[in-house]
Length: 285
DNA sequence: CTAGGATCCTGTCAGC
DNA sequence: TGCTGACAGGATCCTA
Image (tube, rainbow, N blue to C red; front, side, top):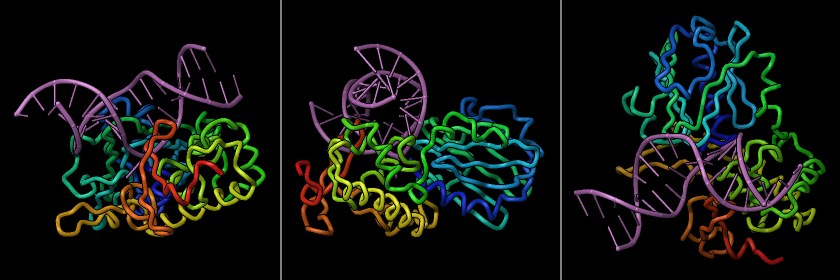
């Protein structure tokens, strides 16, 4: 689930509440969700909260870093004495009583509790030495983020996957960091490129627009607040949906395209649900 | 090296 | 009501 903008939103939202706080106790409710010795984090003060791609990094004062990856359904929910914050996969757990069935790790802090929830258990908290974070296999292989990536570098990375559908290529974190299923669809719509196009068939102009698309769509999401309790609004008993604040195609099948009015469709590309406007994004050039 | 598919896990929803 | 299969904001591992 959570892609770069969601993790960035969590970083920003959580920092103010947990930075400087001491972790007094940790409860691991699911073994596979926490990798490393508990003793390394208990009684440690949180020094900093950082982000690399879709990974959140929580630095502790003893030189240990918790690498938190939310994968598909991870959430971080902070319940403090005076403040609450929740981000990640948007569900009712943002508001309801915790811990619940999906709670995997509980961090007790001096000023509140931080719950790591994760329905599908794909996410994890992994302990690393802060100095070794850069050598972690996943972190090491990450490409640059859209704002740091030059056209030339993006093009070069795309060329390694000439025959793959372009959507599969930009989901690869070694090609560009932070893009997931939402922003892949949104960026391709922005660039007016069909998700099934062979990567090698894109023109320079399309590559340029696609890179700009990743920047624009992810920035728009960060600016609108990502997936937090504030954007997971409920109106008249209906479930809120932060995607509606910025998404043009994602989960908007059967709705009119805002450019041309054609119905947005949902197809399957590279094994993932994929949304596009069949008029704005032509498969044949 | 790349490409494509299966896999980890839980939950929900559509269709019979 | 109950079953069954498809699918889900991710990334890795296996095979060809």
